[in-house]
Length: 498
Image (cartoon, rainbow, N blue to C red; front, side, top):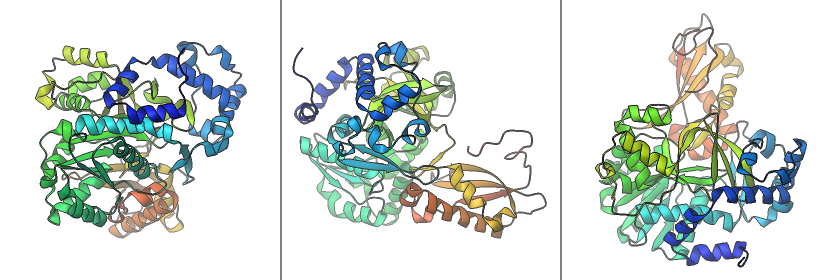
């Protein structure tokens, strides 16, 4: 049977094996057998999940097939994460077996904590290695990595930094700088360090990095000299936006100059854009009818490849369900992201049937090997949140801003929350508010309402307070008359986000 796999052996394997060897092992693994093992291990060792199953009359011993697994009830933040104390959601109830923690904000501002250990983090570090080696050739080029995510307990900054440190320890010629989301510190790092490296990688939320790039150009930073690559996370963006950012950096290889991560605080990095997935997405950007046929909509989702032996995806009513172990084992956890799955061979067959030309036409170097991992596509949150500078903005946060005494004399309480984009690709938060009958819109009311929303967002939403630049925190408020047919039609169930 061979030697048992231990946490220490997994750690040793990451640092001793090449990326190619590790990916071959993942591709050879049986994800269905792996997810059944994870279920049995979780049901046996995690007190909260044992109780979750017992409360629903489920005997873990009867879950021996994938079909039985797929009938298990979904876990969610409300019925599992918030229903059981944090230690009970850890293996053997031992919170201290994890040595680091990340925090995410909820709709009420109550934080959710996500502990993990080194061995869990290395699964995500492998995704960073795949990206840095296959996309950026960082094993061949000295690389300055500039982490521009918010630092502190929030998941993006410290998780990214730690994973990049692992790559440096593994032998990549990589220096990691951590200015966080402070433009002046980013510029200081770039000016002092970037000239000494063959390439620079900026990592952050899409609108923030664009702000930094534009401000840097205004300050005379010669981005084109530093062979800048970008790593994004947290938001869907268009291929036109990718091209615009690439031009401002002086890049000319969209499939190899940037990549987006699909990640969550609870699951870590679940998938990554690869040169292949970017080339395919660029094809769909040119062929909206093909996009509609495959994705069900003409708008483009984020399209990434994922490792089913590390994170096992399913779909539920056009939303994503995830199982995996990132410190707190999660079984059939409903992420509430709208999206779906496409197998590798299924994607290749669809492209052939759609008459797609060689993907070299879209920037893919077809002489390089392509790991045949499946695809997951993500449109965004299905639970009515809006992502803005990487922060999840909840309708509940906006509602509190409208429920102040003076403001309630003007408004019905209905609103539409949107993250919109200017013609130059800059993001802003837009809130369209319905006025009471007989109340006329004016600029003073708009400003008072915007300031009230900003104050409540800062009070209730720590992600907004720490991710969003100060000059972007005041939303643009548009006031509409009662029953406005475009935003507030009568007789129709109202949606608070678009």
